[in-house]
Every structure is written in C-alpha cells, then in structure tokens.
Length: 268
Length: 312
Image (cartoon, rainbow over all chains, first blue to last red; front, side, top):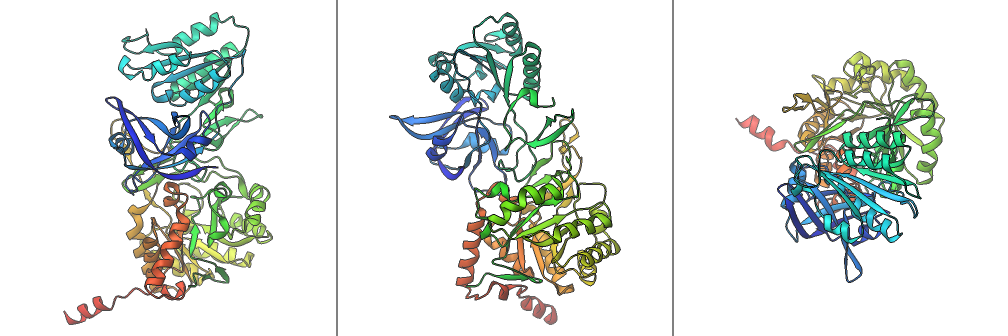
C-alpha cells in the first residue's frame, strides 16, 4: 500500500551540472518498491510549486543490511526539480509511493537487455539487481549526450552487467543514439534463451526501441513518462493511447496502468 | 462539536466534498482515504457514453495553480453504475454524481437513469466545463440556458439538483439566481477560469486544447468573492470551491457564505489532505467556540467597513 511520508534528505549528490541523486529517509516506501515503480515528490510544503513530480525509485538504500531509504535520479529542468537539486541534508521532501505497475522480471535462461536514455537510467539500478539475483544475463544499453552525463556505470559493472555505452558527441562509447548498437545486436543475436527488452527514456527513443522490438520479434517493456498531476489516478493527465482488439485505441492513465507497458500495447 | 451541514434535503456529516474532476470516480482513492469520512464525493463528470477526452498534454502547472484541459474523458454513466457504484456504496461514500450533456435531453436522461441507482445522493450539473466545445458551458453562460437545464432536470428527478457554475461570466450571481428560480436545491461554484499558457521557445500552447481551465490557490480570492456575491443574491445553499489548500481556506469560503466546500487541485498535491482539513476546522471551531459549523455560514462581518463608509 502506498505511503505518504515527509522524508528527510539524507544526502544530495550533484553528478553533473544539472543532475543529482537525492537520498530520502523513506524506508517504508523503499521496502515495498519494486523495480519500475515510482514516487510522487515535492520539496517542502509550498503552493508554488504546487504539484508533486513523479520519479522512478533509483536505489533502495541499505545500511548494514537494513533498508533506510531510497534515492531519486533527477535532472534540473524546472522550478520543482531545481528545488530538489538545491536540497540540503535535513531538508524535508514529501514522498508518496510506491505507485504504478513495476517491470515484470524475466528468469534465466532468458536475457534482460536494458535500454536507457539520459535519466531513463533511473528504474534500471533496482531492475538490474533483481535480474542479476536471478542469474539473468543483463546488458545495459545506455545513451546520453556526453560522457559526463553517463552515471553510475561502475555500479552496473559491479553487478555483472554488460555495458554498451553511447554518447551523442562521441566522448564515450559509440557516437550516436543508443538504438544503433541495440539494432545491431538484435540482428546478430544467437542466445539459448529469449531476450526481454526493458526501455526507459525520451519518448522518441521508446518509440524507436518498440519498432526494433517488433521488427525482430523481441518482447519489450517500456516505462513511459507523461506529465503527471497526482500519480494515483485522480487527474487524468498522464494518459497514453493503448490499442484495443477492434483495431482502435483508448486512453489509459499511465500512473495506474503503467508506467510500465508492453511496447506492443501502445499506439505509438 | 457538530460539523454536519445541509444541502437541500441532504445532510452531510461534514462540509468537505471531493471536487468533481479531481478525485476520479472516488474508487482510485479508496486505499488512501476513508471515503466515508468525507462529507461527499463528487465523481468525475459523466456523459451517457464513454469519451476519450483530449490528447496530452492535458495539464500545465502555473504559479500556485494549474491549467487543465482533460476533455471529460470518462467511462459513461452505465459503466459507472456497474463498475464503480458497488464499491462506493460498500465504502459508505456519499456520492454526488456530476453529469454532463450536449443537449437538454441528455441531462434529463442521465438524471432519470441515476435517480434509480441506490447510493446516489445528489446530482451536480456540469454546465461549466470550459474545455469542451459542445454543451456544458454553453448552457451555463446564459440565464436562459441555466434555467432550462435546471428546470428540465428538476422535473426528472427527486434527487437534490446542484448546478455547478462557471466563473467565466459577467455576473455569476445572476446565473445563481436563475438556477435558484428554476428549482435548484443548491449551487456549486466556481468551476475553473478559462486560461492559457504558451511555451515561448516553441511558440506552442502548453495544452493540446490550446486553452484550459485554471484552478488552484491562484484563483481562491476570486472564487471567495464570487461565493460572497452569490450569497447576497440567493437563499439556497452554496457549495464553495476554488483553490482551497488548507482549513483556513475552507473556512474563508464558509464565512463568505458557503454551506459546504469542495477541494480539488490541492488533493492532487496531497491526497491525504482530508483529515488535516477536518482537524483544522475542528480546532478553529473549538478556538472560536463554534458549536455547529452551520452557525458559521455567511458570518462575514462587514460592519466596520460599513461604519467607515457612513462616517466618511
């Protein structure tokens, strides 16, 4: 069941000019959170900014084996994320969650190929951990604009995740979009098990990944990010068109029916 | 201390109602909120049939407020009755059904259908949604249109009839009076203010519908003024709303003349706001030795101002 807590900021790590990882003392939420679920967050108790913002749970934080909180991977883009970027340890952040439908993790011998664009990395730290704990072979295709915006790469390496990095300026890994190596590898694939693609990032990237998945007959789950007002189904702002059996489509709320969808459910 | 309040023949256990369009069908919140602890739940506006609403983006945050143009996406009255009412009844919610039509006949048919449904406590008539072209606000923007819808629905049901008024008119109190004269049991006000925002980098509107309705604390002083104006002109109860985010805001509406209040946008930011509002109203009442919350309705004291006017 979702909890609403006024969580203390445990730490705030600035990663690059606009990116930060905010650690929150919200153990009750962290204990329940499954990979792909999200929280609705607002710094302080203001009416301006008014609404909370959705964030994937990035890490479940432990201290000597005990869950002490969770962290968020945030990019400063507006007033709300600026406040999160500027938060100091001890500040209070409202945090409601966990919310939404999580990823469905595969089991070995199936492989999990994670495709992340920018802060779309966020849900994959916990997913990679879950999959590796099941001995699933995990690859992470991770793209950003430049090397300085590729984060936590060593943490994934430590989990035994195979990394395929891309940057748009070529400063690290392959130059170009993250979908390029993904496309190549889908063509060349010859494993025993099936592959499940998990994707999170900008919507254009998700649409490309969905296309590649469909073309190669690969199963794919995507985590979508729509403008969300409440996160619990009240406001109807975060809708996404889902195909219906009669060839049409209808709007579903991504906070309740998602944020994770099978890529072939969505009318792209 | 007695928090109960009357809206026509309906007695609410307290003056707090979840605002239509801001609380889904109520069932979405059942895990988080004890629905029976609310005075009422005004469910998302229903047409006879299902609607997909507008494409995203549907909301945009503005200073202390938000714009929305959802376009009344909804499951239609029949699915609502079959899929949502059983849970709402089981959880003891006082259900106020918000109905929308494109024609008078559709309002009448919705009223007839819902009158036979166990657990429906009242009908709120949406004649004020700024985000759809057809129906709704076209009635609510004129005295005749308002009177026509209210009297047609009045004749079709014994349930309390509560037209929800738009602030996008020159004189909301004359619309309220037209509703009262046509047989409304109460009026609720205000719906959102027609508004817009533009992304200057792309020169595109922030909403797919270009314009939308503004809600949230930004509109509260205007809404309070409108409740106050209507209180001078009509005798039926007023359900006040517009930007309520804490107990003091709610009390402001009650003192201005509202018998109950609805809370919408603030519930998005804090879905657990309800017990906080109730606690705040209770402690105010104790502090001011208010025995019955209904004793507070319309008790605004303008005497000092009047004296000043006379003496100057």
